[in-house]
Image (cartoon, rainbow, N blue to C red; front, side, top):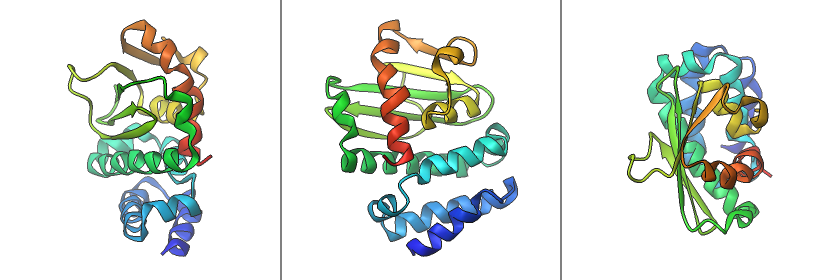
Length: 190
């Protein structure tokens, strides 16, 4: 199974949007079937590779045309991130957070996801936190949000121009290390 997954990923950069709509659910299902822990050991940058490809082919258009595929991927993304975070111990850098609930919402597509950092653990999924449960929200284009998660976004340049937020400004400073260093390194697999 892992060999087939690696083969599909090698072809990922050559797929157009229509092919990706068909292949992405297969990649997610095969990864879950073979075991996400094992897959994340063998292909630790799997979430980042998929997001980068989505950005290349126009993530907003893809998310608008295949919202169910993007939601499935968002659930997988945070499940995989939690496994990598546990394996690498990267979230120890963020143990100072008792609990923080963050939403990410695209303003050009239905893409939305959320995550929680709680006592050194990372979890999340598709959709947004309910307003009363949400501590902070980032919003911007689908591409900007995906580049934020993979660490391919220059936060200083993007903040307030491409990337906006909702929540107390102190969270922006507290979440800075998480959004610039820790979460991108987890999604890249190291």
